[in-house]
Image 1: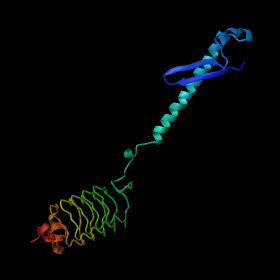
Image 2 (image 1 turned 120 degrees about the horizontal axis):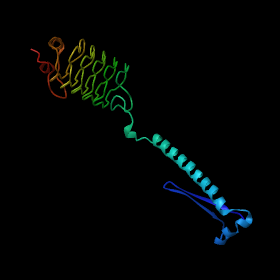
Image 3 (image 1 turned 90 degrees about the horizontal axis):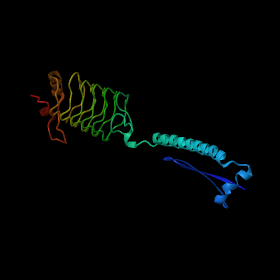
Image 4 (image 1 turned 90 degrees about the vertical axis):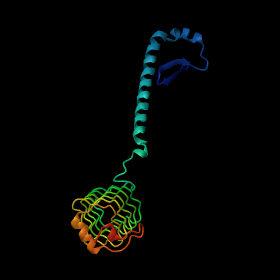
Length: 221
């Protein structure tokens, strides 16, 4: 007689053990002793085997679920680097000559980065931070720099023509020495008196976006 061992696994219940075949009848168990089997003695080892199998499979299932939870991470939780500029980190980096022209970089973090000769022409940099950054020779022409932070930044020999710097911060040792500020708008930019006087010597033009004359925004005499 061919006997089939059926094991049912369930995470909330113990394994179900049954002996069955296509011709199984309740009276079959009565004949097991005649075949050399002791039903009572046989039942316990089979139950232990089934329970052991259940624990092994349940353990493997748990490991698989834990592994899957590490693989399928919510993209919304992924690290986005220094700001909304894709996945690139822009803080504390050497970005010399990098082309950011025309990009939308609102509140982007460029703190302490080297941005020499970087191209920001026409970029939207509202609220961006250039704290202690090196912008020597950078092209910031036509850029929207409202409320940007230039504290302690080196903005020497940069092109700020027609840039809108309304409300930007330029505290500390921020330097605009040698920069082109034709048409730039410095409305509400807190400048050191010596820096303001220097800029007034080279100030000229009218900002095409705000319509404000550069000299007026610097309170030049």
